[in-house]
Amino acid sequence: MAAKSKDLDKPTLTDALQKNKDGENVDTLTENYFAVSVLRDFILPDLLDKDTVELLYWAGKNLSRQLILDMESLPELFSKAGFGQLEITKQTPSSYTYKLTGPEVKQRFDTNNDDPEFSLETGIIAETVEKTIAAYCLGTYTVNSKAKSVSIKIQIDRN
Image (cartoon, helix red, strand yellow):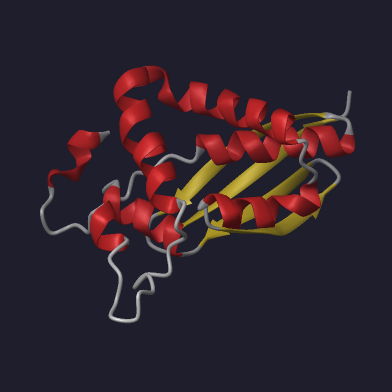
C-alpha cells in the first residue's frame, strides 16, 4: 500500500524512471512499468484493502481470457507489460514452475519494502496454462526477498 513508501532511503517509482543524459532509462525499466506499478501497487490496494490479493488473482485470470494467450506468448507479454522477465524453470505432469525476475521485479521489492505481491501475474499464468492444457489449474507464488525474484507454481488438476 502507499503507506509502505514512507522510508525516504528507498528508491521511489519516479527515481526508477529517471533518464540518463542519453535519454535512456537508468534502470532499464520498461516504459509501461510506471503505470502498471502505480495501479497494482498503490491505487488498487488502497481501494481493495484486504481483498487485494484474491481480486488481483482473479483479475489476472480474466485478463488472460480476454487476451487469448498461450503458454509460449507469456514471456513476451510479461516483458511488454512491464511485469519482468518470465521463464519456465520446471515442468512435471502435475505442475509448472516459473521464475519472474528483472529490473521491474527488483524495483517492486525495493518500493514495497521486500513484501510485494504477485497475484495478478500468478492469475495470468494460471489461466493461460489452464486454457493451453485444458485442465483446471491453481497458481501460487513465493517471493525470494534476498534474490529479489518470484517463483510461481501452477498446480494441475487433471480430474
